[in-house]
Image (cartoon, rainbow, N blue to C red):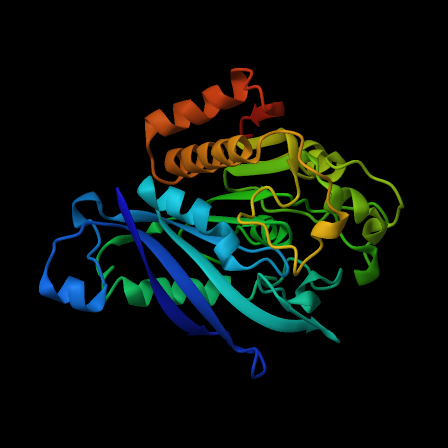
Length: 332
């Protein structure tokens, strides 16, 4: 399947200039027709025979460029999902200007948490997808009732905390890599506590056994030590124990914090506190694409075969899965 992409620019309501704009790259399944317009413009039509497409929105880690997720976005588009990456620069904390998934820090304070979204880019992206569905190369090709919200690192946490259909209609599942829902003590939360998380949607948490960034950030949550997987596992075991939808955990042997980001870029972010991977990076990415592709294809796209493959991967003793568990949802 051919994958193409288009760029978009959106406004972030409430943000102060110059941090009130974001740029999107939207990957989609395409079919080349060889027309003069295609050759002149470089715009290739969507493969409308496969439409309408489910949508995946990828929230980035802090100071991780969207090009680092291009391999994943392209792979998901090849599996039939329109996939959105984006660039947003903001000064969310005084003196710290960074590429960000879009975080509303006041919404994460104990007295405010749960009242409003803490992710500033999701709503504007959804609004722009609706506009794209009305005109342009993807007109009539997007199924905005079938959306997966996922992310890496801080973007993964933002996805987990904001996967609420009452806030963002159309979101049907959420996933994260290198993320957890522990609450920062600096924001006034109790030491070693976790955010109350949404429970309505199928959820996939992924992490690496060599995640030096999570291990090295334990002090943010009130203690000085943590393993690379402790808070990811506790998010699954404790914070999401009452999930009303299916919830899955996958720990990947030998993967580190930036295993989802390729090609590696050590000029920004915190790769200098990460651990070295101990398994082939290509094999780790192949597993990540398989997990995310089958999870989103099964739970959001409604593909029964992909859902069966996802469940089989977790239960089949894959050599790179240190812990794989699927906990069925609880009916309340």
